[in-house]
Image (cartoon, rainbow, N blue to C red; front, side, top):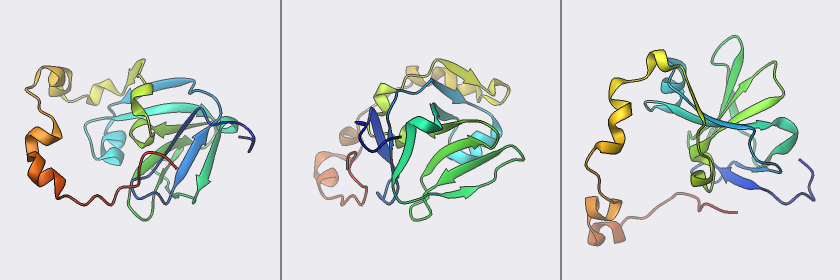
Length: 154
């Protein structure tokens, strides 16, 4: 990514030690249900935005990497542990976890992978009773929480 290009999307880890920017939109956004992605995300599935490496740059800090298989590495923040990416060693693209973006609402998945490991209850999530964070904790308790999370912007 060139320094003069205005970022299309930005993001980073929870503590702000690692930040990134894209100079072009992702080529694909997907969800992966495979066991490796479940473990790497600590969640029922992982969601990724695929980006050409030439359209991507780490703009603050450098992530640590874990070689999760013979074909891929996963980047994460060594300070706060936020999972950040999945990189095939032999490919010109990087897949950034959608939750690490400042505006994850702009990244809508178009495909699912690893569905042999999809947890049966995942398809019914939208039908579960739901409430906001404020409803869950109450405004009084919520107002007393001190967040150490980096804001969703630079």
